[in-house]
Image 1 (tube, one colour):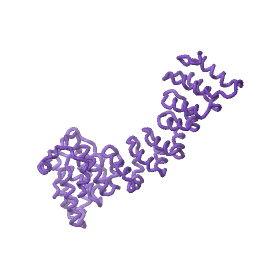
Image 2 (cartoon, helix red, strand yellow):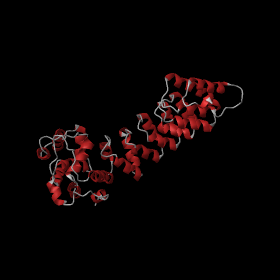
Image 3 (tube, rainbow, N blue to C red):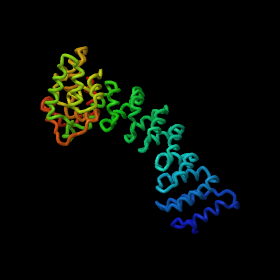
Image 4 (cartoon, one colour):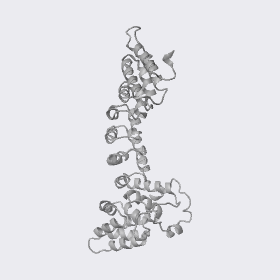
Length: 369
């Protein structure tokens, strides 16, 4: 029969339309299935064919069974020429087919995505959270849902910009180990890493540091901070600023802003963070010795206890300079310079003769000892 011709033609569509509009013969449950199967045989269609296909589909859709509607939605979900308004209608009427559309189709209206994010089933919400084209409102609606699996899928989706919601996610991650690990694994590839690092607890910060160390190993890397002249010059300036008699913190923050370079607000957070890890990372990235890290920390925060100072010194001793450089570049948003090569970290190499070996998964745990 011509109805099943290899190429979809206007005559074929007219034939289906005639059957669909006919009052004779009662229900016509196969028409939508046949129509869609014919349409998807070709990857592209003319504008007239697409319009004609949509008009006939609207005509036969009211009499289609639920199985037919699911079939149509699943077949059209990946088709590049499928009419957007028809897909929107199918997304509201299909069952399993709606999941296929919301997972794969890039032609759905934004309002359909918003409605699915707010009111869809848990499976649909999880499928939405994995899309690479999420807009800010869809992300907000998904985060507002109580389902932790949706939050996990969203965080695991590295194409999703979650910076504006990082505080909420970090709070929820306190009771969800999988979510906490997924947040940490976004380091060092995402702009929200600094917000995450600042708000994280000490164990989470150490997981991030250990994860970066495990990912980078001790292999040669192209990354280095945009520093003036050499690391030693920058260190001397920071050390002098830390020894200022008056306004020690202000002098150090101003110098740090110039040295990295970074925004003054970031330099302030690096310096004043109560946990101390950000400052240790910066100083270690510049090649500071553990004792120097301890001395600068004491100058900037005279109220620190001896135990807190020893903790900072120990963290500096356990952290390779090259890994610290990568972390600081990510956290502060400093860009890499192709002209500046990081200095060979002789002290760390001497203290860690097996440093060329890739560290195992216990790196983060060792930092907590």
